[in-house]
Image (cartoon, rainbow, N blue to C red; front, side, top):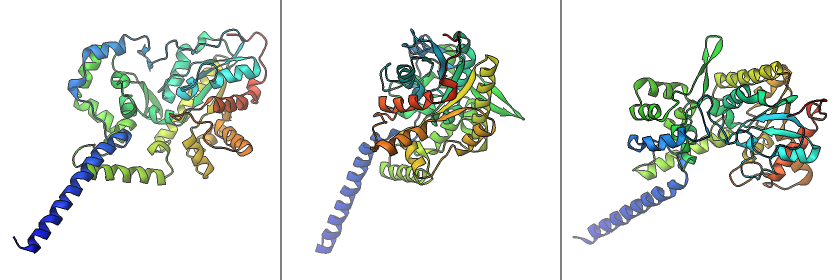
Length: 378
């Protein structure tokens, strides 16, 4: 072989080695970012024993999909309850102890309890339906709906696993379906979870017939978002670059967690319908409805930059005279006064004890929660 041929062969070998090293690097490094890639369930992994563990657990609820156990977070006894609260993990108080939820900090500040009925992973629809199902157990003058932006996204979905697949290492949500309200004419129709037992869920997820797949790909927001992501497979370099590009485009669009709060007009209308439904049910129970807007550090960064993805929802609350507390404004005002950044955010993004204390202070200033009517009790 000539010297020139040897040089070309050497260049080719080096280029091939570089491509292989890059492919190995992307294959290993991309595993750290599962949320950027399409998730899929192997039908062989759908086992009856696993399904039974989900459906026979005390957390399973045939109407809501799942619930906390116990339904109300302990720690609200011994003080008169002025309110009951519903929502997701930002209401439940994930990543803090029972004495540092915003309900507990409210009680420490005022001497009055707020019953904590938040549930990890809930959509806005589940929070509203839980109030309808269980809210009569507590006689409180106020009902609080804690609203964190991810609740809108989950309300647009029916199969919960597609919302949590990348962050569900124990596959808790593999068999979890939730209720979902669907637009029907000028109104909304409730689509209930499809299964109340393990055998039904295993059959549905193994078979995945055309009707099931069609619903997920056309009506389920989380499932559609999942299908839009690139797969994590060979060639890893190409798919990793594709995933990074999609993520950067979503960030430039001003969307936290890689997606906007509302997926078009119907998504916003669904949220408005659910809040209106919550308010109406509260009033029927002689409770004053109060919406609490909750945000993560990432959401606050958007607001600081002048972007408010829920501005239309806030106008809806004002126009319909539904009382609300803007937790984001309270958190940002505290930051402006006291300085610092990040002290309100726990490692997984929930509010810290300090963040919950700020929210509790904002709640304590609202007229509905400043006084406890005579005879109001849990």
